[in-house]
Length: 277
Image 1 (cartoon, rainbow, N blue to C red):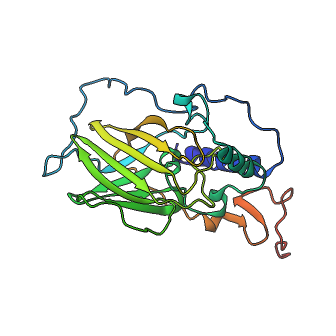
Image 2 (image 1 turned 90 degrees about the horizontal axis):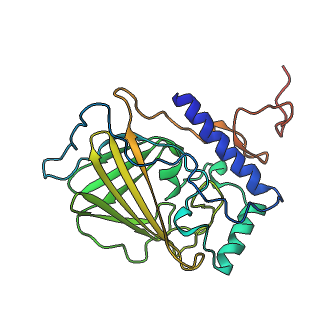
């Protein structure tokens, strides 16, 4: 199952890469009626649900290994489609026709993309910090929850400058300071600017589910903010993350053939060619 899921994710990434690098017809005006593969409401378990585990200080313990389906299309369901500004629409057209999917270059997904990729992740939590360990690109982010404010003049980054706080039983993560180059907000080539602001709300209603609500605003590229949500499920006991060495599987980056391998090398020859045996 994990292999099938990984192949599905890689296929989606390749599909997005080929789509974004081709001079093709733009997608339908409003293809966002539903979240393809998105989680629905939490389903009642067959038996009694296990209670939410808690840490020594009484907070919900979000720690564990989590998985959820890929969201491929539909992040903008709540607003009926991407509410582009002129600059945002221009950036989107650029991504579709002239850019390369950043993940095909083995770059970090950033947020919100990393959390909607369909690839599992682990959360590690203590009283002062929460860390997200991503199987995708084998990377991480770590969020202080000690009351500090955002850094002043933080260096722009893929995951941004994040600070967290607890609002009751909900962990709220506020992130700013993002890179505006070589970064998409989803697998559908939608852009973001350096003005993007992301607020995530994480909660654990029971032992087996992790709820995630995300609000994104970016006044440079979008006329209004939007919110989407999903539910992750706990991975079965014994399942953990697989090492994801993107560059190891990038078939021919230096030769200009970008994307995950293996590919059919008869129709997609390497440059330079493989040595003859």
